[in-house]
Image (cartoon, rainbow, N blue to C red; front, side, top):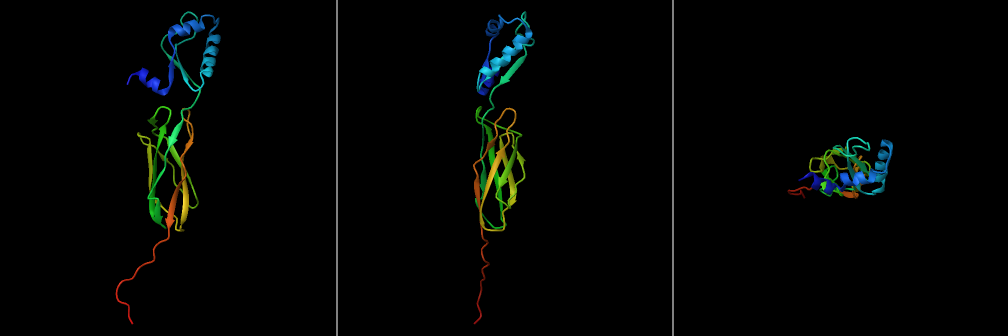
Amino acid sequence: MTYGMYFEKLGFIPVSKDFMRTMFSRIESEEDIEAYSRDLGNIVVNEYASLFYPKLNRENLIQSSVHTYNTAKHTTSLTLVISPTSVAAGGTYRVSGTLGDHSAAVPLASKTITFTSTSPITIHSTTTTSTGQYSVSGLTSPTTAGTYGIQAHFAGDALHSAVNSHSQPLKVLTTAAPTTTGLIPK
């Protein structure tokens, strides 16, 4: 994948040297150039402006470094799967799912996932893998029969919006009464 393809997938808008020279030709000071660049980034709503220049001056506007102005966070998606969805009281189950950058259609690695749930269920936080997946296994269900809600959360970061999964039900069944076999005396 080329840099151009990568930047395009992320929603960057390439700005050419000629464009920048034209835009900055009437600006008198380096401070004006810096302010104009910030304003340009704010004008381009929900997009990125990638401005290529190392130092701001009228003689040499554009050389090699990159200045990026972000005006919107990427939207994210978060799934939650409970397996099995029905379990005996005191039985074990697991939660799993995937976190992704919905805007760029890529998984999000090394991100913390937290959980909320109906009491008395508590699930410790976990981290996504390189493929955006997470899993917490060996969870013990409550000892009281009923339906309990569980929801996964990603708090967001500098580049990605916060997101909550849909709440999923865990159905806890009563334990079956023990059965006896054999002859029953008269």
